[in-house]
Length: 232
Image (tube, rainbow, N blue to C red; front, side, top):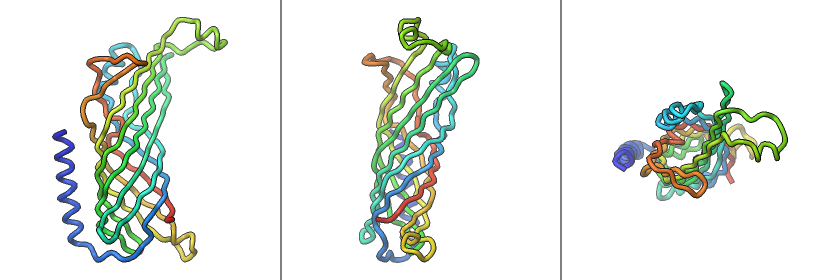
């Protein structure tokens, strides 16, 4: 919680300074739908330490995912509301072992409309989202065979999940309007950079059973997103 409050304070100070230097905002397109290509630098060090101790493959710390969402601009009050979701999944194998990870985050944010000129948007934002994280590890890869044989054979897989709320701090920088066609003038392309801040400790479960003393993870971490959208 202290990290979230500190990061939020820094975001407010930065946004206030930028806001004071901007020009008046004119009438622009105010609603955008978009898709995103995301790069996450996650924090799974404690989880990997547990996996290695148990003889399993560790997970990669960098994940590539996809997502999308929409955002609405309110020029008169210099605010923006943003909704976005992101997801990634990856299967890794080696030394006759496999692991699988999937994470999804979805939530809303409130942003300051620092710049909304004819071709430029600059929006620092902060919000809250919910994160779903699931992992599966296998100490040995299954031998090819029938479904019935696999289900009745010895189990060598373990599955865990951890869901939690997270803070979302970031900056949206985009160019709007390309070319002279009607479609080109509605296009938006930009980048977002930010950080997901875990709120509270991870609560791990397998099925309906709660697991105690689980590792702390950050399935979102630092992220960079390439966003492409269309004004409505």
